[in-house]
View 1: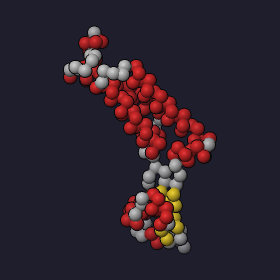
View 2 (view 1 turned 30 degrees about the vertical axis):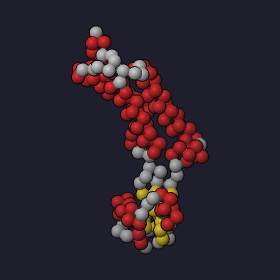
View 3 (view 1 turned 60 degrees about the vertical axis):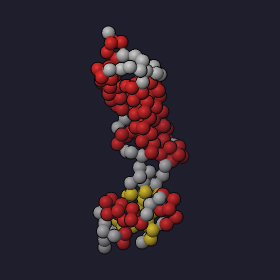
View 4 (view 1 turned 90 degrees about the vertical axis):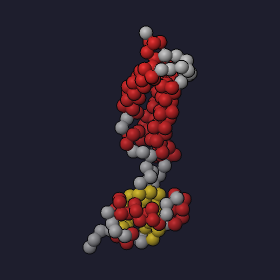
Length: 163
């Protein structure tokens, strides 16, 4: 009966693909819950890795006959476990956290763009101005004290205190 529902080999019909997709959806949901909310909410490079790899690995369980279903699930569980472990280790080691997740980069300070850091980050003056408008709720760079490219790729700003 399982062979009829899930099929084997390369010739799978629509019902077999649908059954596989249903199971993978449930399994992916469980793996995402194990990975934790940060894996799918923060969108840093560290967090995007789990999205890419789980998608690639779990898609094989729907469309491919090899490797085995159990091997695919094992690989997915390793990815989720590594993400959790690295996230946990970065809590206790700032150096490891910076290596895995990156660090903020100062883009603007004292009324001036830090061109070296902007170039390194591939952030243009227009990108910075957009980030200031969106994140800083400020009209111009003159309204802010500092701007940073955060490790999740967003620009954050510290506005000047009005006297």
